Length: 116
Image (cartoon, rainbow, N blue to C red; front, side, top):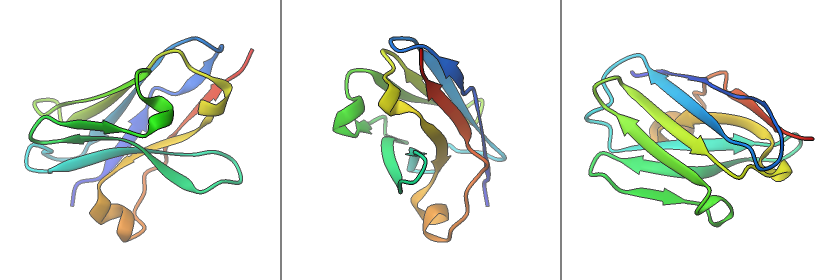
Protein backbone atom coordinates (compact mmCIF):
# COMPACT_ATOMS: atom_id res chain seq x y z
CA UNK A 1 0.00 0.00 0.00
CA UNK A 2 1.27 3.45 -0.89
CA UNK A 3 2.53 5.58 1.97
CA UNK A 4 2.98 9.35 1.98
CA UNK A 5 5.67 11.66 3.34
CA UNK A 6 4.75 15.32 3.74
CA UNK A 7 7.25 18.19 3.64
CA UNK A 8 7.54 21.90 2.97
CA UNK A 9 6.02 23.37 6.09
CA UNK A 10 7.52 26.18 8.12
CA UNK A 11 7.00 29.55 9.73
CA UNK A 12 5.60 32.25 7.46
CA UNK A 13 4.17 35.71 8.02
CA UNK A 14 0.52 36.45 7.30
CA UNK A 15 0.05 37.01 3.60
CA UNK A 16 2.97 34.78 2.74
CA UNK A 17 3.14 31.58 0.72
CA UNK A 18 4.30 28.00 1.13
CA UNK A 19 4.27 24.95 -1.10
CA UNK A 20 3.74 21.61 0.58
CA UNK A 21 4.82 18.36 -1.02
CA UNK A 22 3.48 14.87 -0.49
CA UNK A 23 5.79 12.18 -1.80
CA UNK A 24 4.28 8.73 -2.31
CA UNK A 25 6.20 5.48 -1.85
CA UNK A 26 4.69 4.10 -5.04
CA UNK A 27 2.71 5.00 -8.11
CA UNK A 28 -0.20 7.37 -7.60
CA UNK A 29 -1.46 7.30 -11.17
CA UNK A 30 -4.21 4.82 -10.42
CA UNK A 31 -5.27 6.42 -7.15
CA UNK A 32 -8.47 8.33 -7.80
CA UNK A 33 -8.52 10.77 -4.90
CA UNK A 34 -5.64 12.12 -2.86
CA UNK A 35 -6.42 14.70 -0.21
CA UNK A 36 -4.72 17.28 1.97
CA UNK A 37 -5.96 17.49 5.56
CA UNK A 38 -4.98 19.76 8.41
CA UNK A 39 -5.21 19.60 12.16
CA UNK A 40 -4.85 22.61 14.41
CA UNK A 41 -3.95 22.13 18.09
CA UNK A 42 -6.92 20.89 20.06
CA UNK A 43 -9.08 20.49 16.97
CA UNK A 44 -10.12 17.63 14.75
CA UNK A 45 -8.38 16.83 11.49
CA UNK A 46 -10.26 18.39 8.58
CA UNK A 47 -10.22 17.86 4.83
CA UNK A 48 -8.77 20.87 3.01
CA UNK A 49 -8.36 19.94 -0.65
CA UNK A 50 -8.77 17.00 -3.03
CA UNK A 51 -7.18 16.12 -6.34
CA UNK A 52 -8.52 13.34 -8.52
CA UNK A 53 -6.96 11.23 -11.23
CA UNK A 54 -9.44 12.67 -13.74
CA UNK A 55 -8.09 16.16 -13.17
CA UNK A 56 -10.62 17.70 -10.84
CA UNK A 57 -9.85 19.60 -7.66
CA UNK A 58 -12.04 20.57 -4.72
CA UNK A 59 -11.46 22.83 -1.75
CA UNK A 60 -13.03 23.67 1.55
CA UNK A 61 -14.58 27.14 1.41
CA UNK A 62 -12.04 28.68 3.78
CA UNK A 63 -9.14 28.08 1.36
CA UNK A 64 -10.83 28.59 -2.00
CA UNK A 65 -8.95 31.11 -4.11
CA UNK A 66 -5.86 30.86 -1.89
CA UNK A 67 -4.79 27.21 -2.06
CA UNK A 68 -4.12 25.12 -5.15
CA UNK A 69 -3.74 21.36 -5.10
CA UNK A 70 -1.94 19.56 -7.90
CA UNK A 71 -0.41 16.19 -8.63
CA UNK A 72 2.56 15.05 -10.69
CA UNK A 73 2.00 11.38 -11.45
CA UNK A 74 5.45 11.05 -13.02
CA UNK A 75 7.03 12.10 -9.72
CA UNK A 76 4.42 10.37 -7.55
CA UNK A 77 3.97 13.65 -5.69
CA UNK A 78 1.02 15.80 -4.71
CA UNK A 79 1.46 19.49 -3.95
CA UNK A 80 -0.45 22.12 -2.05
CA UNK A 81 0.39 25.69 -3.01
CA UNK A 82 -0.78 27.99 -0.25
CA UNK A 83 -0.95 31.73 -0.85
CA UNK A 84 -2.27 34.63 1.21
CA UNK A 85 -1.77 32.61 4.35
CA UNK A 86 -3.67 33.57 7.48
CA UNK A 87 -3.00 32.78 11.15
CA UNK A 88 -6.00 30.45 11.10
CA UNK A 89 -4.19 28.29 8.53
CA UNK A 90 -1.75 27.30 11.26
CA UNK A 91 -1.91 23.51 11.57
CA UNK A 92 -0.17 20.25 10.86
CA UNK A 93 -0.87 19.28 7.26
CA UNK A 94 -1.24 15.69 6.05
CA UNK A 95 -1.95 14.02 2.74
CA UNK A 96 -3.80 10.77 2.46
CA UNK A 97 -6.39 8.69 0.71
CA UNK A 98 -9.83 8.07 2.18
CA UNK A 99 -9.00 4.37 2.47
CA UNK A 100 -5.85 4.93 4.52
CA UNK A 101 -7.54 7.58 6.65
CA UNK A 102 -10.40 5.21 7.46
CA UNK A 103 -7.86 2.67 8.72
CA UNK A 104 -6.08 5.27 10.83
CA UNK A 105 -2.91 5.27 8.74
CA UNK A 106 -1.29 8.70 8.66
CA UNK A 107 2.12 10.12 7.89
CA UNK A 108 4.05 12.42 10.19
CA UNK A 109 2.61 15.55 8.60
CA UNK A 110 4.30 18.90 8.11
CA UNK A 111 3.77 21.88 10.42
CA UNK A 112 2.64 25.22 9.02
CA UNK A 113 2.76 28.20 11.35
CA UNK A 114 1.45 31.58 10.18
CA UNK A 115 2.52 34.31 12.55
CA UNK A 116 4.09 37.74 12.58
